[in-house]
Length: 177
Image (cartoon, rainbow, N blue to C red):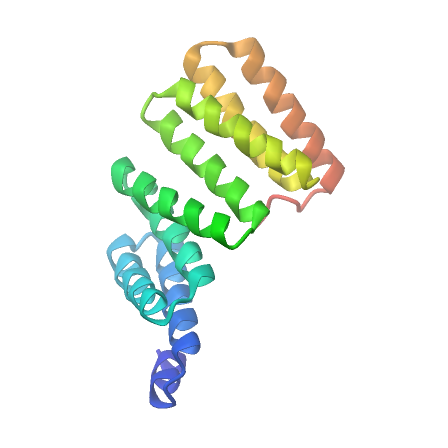
């Protein structure tokens, strides 16, 4: 891509990281996972080389999402755990809680509902502490899915209704990308 070539020609590592990262996200969105991983793994290599912890964490988060979508839950969880540690070092509570939620989702996906709830409630606690309505809604959906996996449908409905309250409070476009 032109932006990537330009950033390489002027030795702009931050620009290269961002261009690779965005190219990876675009390819993920269209379902081209091998190409998305190629771009994101190149971005990850650059973030580590240049010590950019924030973009390393974000890139690992994006890589974890791809591995989750392709059902490689072990790799997804590995990248999620590392991103969680990095967001913790950065003291980024929102993204830290988001990663806890993602870890909860991965445990739900492999049928480990007890662990899913453990991580989900940790995430919810942080979203409550930082007063993130959107975050609370996201994690309540995840908690509901874990309860449904357990067969505790009343609890699942309870958390989905909480989620609905948060969606309603934020307005109609609150969950659109």
